[in-house]
Image 1: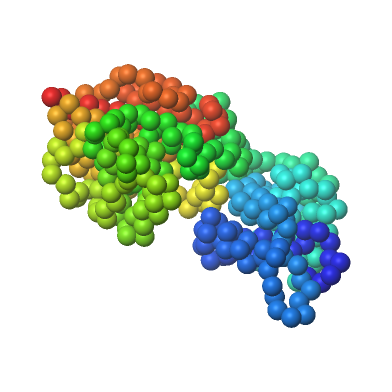
Image 2: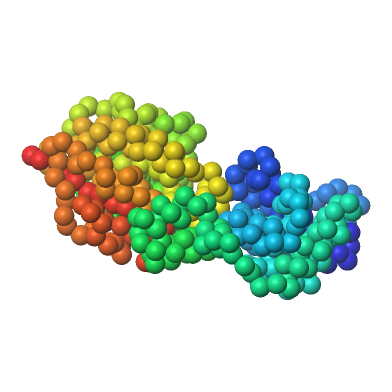
Length: 392
């Protein structure tokens, strides 16, 4: 970008490059965006004679909103674009039109800036086409061919959550998951969604206990339950399948000055003796249908078949974890989804009873034998919690 270029053009160019990687190459937004921002800092040095500044703090926020917002609202943007095209544009042009339409329909950007600056990024061969389509989008009131298109989710997700929650709560949850999540910090400075903090609290890890956290990476719940090395508290063992993910747990525990024993292992085949733990937490891999606001591209990746496959994995984890709980001990199961198949439809493990006490913290609502918080209940991720106690 040359000196005197309009504000925001570099931000839009960076956002466009990131969107093309996400949409055409299958890259993950949460990986692409930090990498793009790291390469375009305001104080970067491009060598002698460089006159191209990097992104300001405001521009960095703009890039983040453009990429995450356009990715979330992809279907909604396409619904407006397709009203004004006779033939589907090529993928690169489609991405550019989505970027402009997101600014016009969802981001509240002034039409002259949204259209003019987006058109400036277009190759000459399609510049007139992009300009014409975006001007029509800017001049027209949005029209939605379906509720799923307005909300910008695949049909199956809208249908599934409507069946699970009822139409009012489904729409409220889906709309809330189209908004960026708030940043919440624990007292120790660790950034963690409140619903995850409430799950860790529900384990009720106590002084002298040994607690296992299965599928623990990146370590938020493990560190929430752990104590400093010189303090009296629970001894926490954290398990995850991949060495790199276990490394995240180790790094986070070290940064916080906490004692966590980290182990690389498959939670379905844990390397521990039966009855070794006072409490076991299974924060199981799931469809993430309660946390879609954190994963902008997840709604376009997850399928109904994935949910069925995940149920099988969850059952294996729950059965293996149950064997590790001592008589009288506790088993806690959580998922950041909203489907019954991944939560309350799981059978109570043999030899266990449901813990019917309310959780010690959080805005949980009763849900079958467990508890649930919806995204719009307390502006958190959606979460389901099940607690069991092993018979003595």
